Length: 457
Image (cartoon, rainbow, N blue to C red):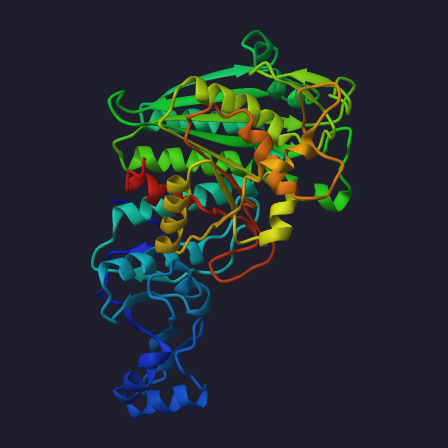
């Protein structure tokens, strides 16, 4: 197994790393040499979460370190270590059960991450040495970093073409089948809303479809919103709102990374990945407020706002997904600012038409320390999407329940009897925190994989 640079198998030159919580710090400290006790006492170390201290031996050489850990099963409890510790090889000497060891392994990798495609890091990152590395944890880490890298890459280098190229690379690596319908062929194959949103860009819109697995296994469809940049269209965003819109393909990044993870771990599932990849641009043929678009499901939609484009590209993808009669349908989308206002950046908003499915994802989130929060599909709010001249409006003039109405719009395109869940995810860190550098972020991904791994179907 090839290890990422954050890790090493070699423990011969490793320095001891102690992992201590508040409840056991006094007993641990009493067992340390007198000079270590004095040094840590001078720094008032009490095992508080997120604390880190090193000490030297009698010759002034670096001799060890201690981390304050609150929740041993939370990967982010360890993620401050790579930035807090000096370069070198570190070996956890505190006894850890397998789950805590895997959390340490994952948290260390998350803490080491920096997006360095355009600006090389000048810091030498410390390495973690473990007696044995868990391959599944490494695959989960790779999926999380895949999301971060995809979201962090500027649209100039991560448009629909580039997103397709990465999907093709993933398909080749796992012997999956992939087809792409692009440009005006979307109209020929009846994907009118994907075409309408993306037609004003010089980069052709497309639907990417990847399939993998044994036909005898349960069929899961994963859909991702791949708006590689969102100007807002003719309902143009203000500068502040447009600044980070390279991240508006974060849903596609999550869906692609989850599909890649399922394939890497060879779960007994059959998966179809659908990514609607577009750029919502301004041009002479941009779709307009007041236009009527008839979707793949033959539902007429009045365009209330061209900046509510994610639900438009997803509605055709969801219709295609339901045509495949899956056992389970999951979609991921950076869909609404309203979800961020309600829940903040760390909690994705989960909607589901099946209580067992919702509870399975929520419970997996608690177990993996990758939390989500369920929101209601309050159907009386469909009144906010009423159109006088079409079956449905794509948005509302009201500021009420923006995330709920977006989810209700999507639900309209989910066939009756299809078990479906929608994750309205931010996919972004606004500021640097340990293990969570500013920029792209995977949220709800580890929980989704744990749910699928448990075969909660």
